[in-house]
Amino acid sequence: MDNYSYPLDDDWSTEEMVTVVQFLNLVEKAYEEGIQTDTFLAGYKDFKTVVKSIGEEKRIGRSFEQTSGYSLYQSVKTAKNTQQKRFKM
Image (cartoon, rainbow, N blue to C red; front, side, top):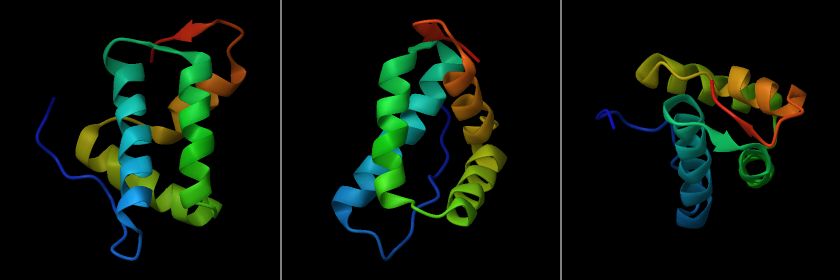
């Protein structure tokens, strides 16, 4: 795993930060080795309990993609559109 920081909000609780980082780890996994679609979408659902607005999601996605090279948007889009039980970016 590369050494980069996650785009976190200082106003989030520790639990909320953990939820966001766990989802970003799923994005990484989708790119690096592939992931079960339902696992990924469940993580995204949890992520959306913390990051409710599209604007905030886009901001986090852009920041994460700049540091990691992994697109939150593209991985969510692929997971939602796939008919397969597992996908890899």
